[in-house]
Amino acid sequence: MTYTLKQAADLLAAGKTSAVELASDYLARIEAAQGALNAFITVDRELTLAMARKADASRAAGNAGLLTGVPIAHKDIFCAEGWKTTCGSKMLEHFVSPYDAGVVERCTAAGLVTLGRTNMDEFAMGSSNENSAYGAVRNPWDRDAVPGGSSGGSAAAVAARLAPAATATDTGGSIRQPAAFCGVTGLKPTYGVVSRYGMVAYASSLDQGGPIAQTAEDCALMLNVMAGHDVRDSTSLEMAKEDYSRDLNQPLKGLRIGMPREYFGAGLAADVAAAIESALAEYRKLGAEVVEISLPRTELAIPAYYVIAPAEASSNLSRFDGVRYGHRSQNYEAYFEEHNKEAKEEKEKVTLLEAMYETSRAEGFGWEVKRRILTGAYVLSHGYYDAYYLKAQKVRRLLSEDFQAGFGQCDLIAAPAAPTVAWNLGEKGDDPIAMYLADIYTLGVNLAGLPGIAHPVGFGANGRPVGLQLIGNYFSEARLLNAAHQFQQATDWHTRAPAL
Amino acid sequence: MSLTQADVRRIARLARLQVNDTEVAEVEQKLNGIFGLIEQLKAIDTEGVEPMSHARDVALRLREDVATETNRRAAFQAVAPAVEDGLYLVPKVIE
Image 1 (cartoon, rainbow over the protein chains, first blue to last red):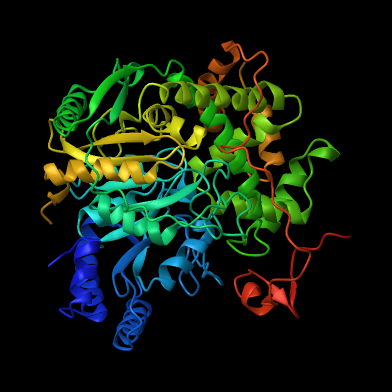
Image 2 (cartoon, each protein chain N blue to C red):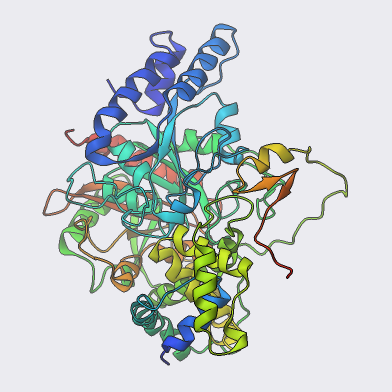
């Protein structure tokens, strides 16, 4: 048997199951599916069962909270004490975190039991999960398809019912796009709502943690745990504690949903467009009004993002130097000798320490990560900063202003999560441009710092899931969850599960 | 604009990333593809637009100047590639 987060919580509260029993059942499912899906990087039965026993003990002592004993999976980007935290990279292959991320701390305090660590694109850079140093994840709906990325393991795990819910992160669509590709629900909160402390940094001004689950209701329960001010993250917002499930049952009558015409033009696959049309018809039946709006500079999100994110990445990833943690090359002396022998000028030579940095990073990082580091180093380098980085930040403001103009005409914005359903593994090969262009509908939300949710609304021509993305204004998470929940009360797409 | 292989080697050094002779041509080609995409920005009129460095314009907080972290040196050094007597070991830097 598999459950939603809410169902598992109810069964535990009614004494019909235990945390140990739930954890054991899910661990068995994970083990059975691992060969086919590769959704997890690390599973540690003993650590999991110890957490489950502790949850059962605190329930027996009368100290259980709403979610005590419910099992979830963590994206392998959140540091968790005693767990290997690889971030999908060879660089961190042997890194066992000495501390907990803010999100992990909150989940543990709520009594949630960790089932394991989900696979992901290396350092969250990718849209297909093919950039993982631990192998690609397969889409549970069709094993020839990618699960999306970068939170591909979290989305695949929830879709295959290997965990009731999973944590994830979204820098340019990494929650919403894999949720859409795998037919599950994923929420990217307003920037600053979820602590970034202990979440391995990719692009700090865009990174935001959030949940992936089967239902909007479960996402609300997860966000209630994950959200909250954290002094250890300088961009964490100081705001009063919210109950994100408070509006779930509000009727949608009078809700204005904006359809940006730029999101529904050329480039959007017909089967995705059709599923989204049907979903919007359903929203109309629920009392919402759909109005056409314009986000005229949508296309610029791609170049702006692919300047800003790599710039921040090149800075963030400079911490991987082979000294304090992570991979250290054994080959740096040979490189030092050879490079300096060939160097024509004195200034081309490297020191032994530089040789160690260069070889450790070359061996530890995969090619997509290297490309983004190099792109970032270039746009930040002397003489190019204004032309690229500052320019991109100005365009970022224009994009953000477009969203605000849009919200003058509607409450929520409806959009596809991606131009197509999940593509085939290997289809985009090693072509970064093809991959980047597929991010068109999700990047703007991160640049503006807005919240967005993706929920399943049907299937494409080849039977792969289609997700609808709803975008809200700042701090409208409860409203987004309300809309998706009402949709899920009237439809059953979110209950469909792939055959394993 | 177009990056040359010399540019790639220069950026790679700046980024402390070894890119060897067999890799440099492909890196050059891929980065030029990426810069082709990024170049679109140049055509946009951003006269008078304030750069947006952050999703929410919030002021950085100041905290009380007191020690809040406990000393966990042993735990943090347990994940380091090479340590001795509480110090991180690096290749020789002074001849």
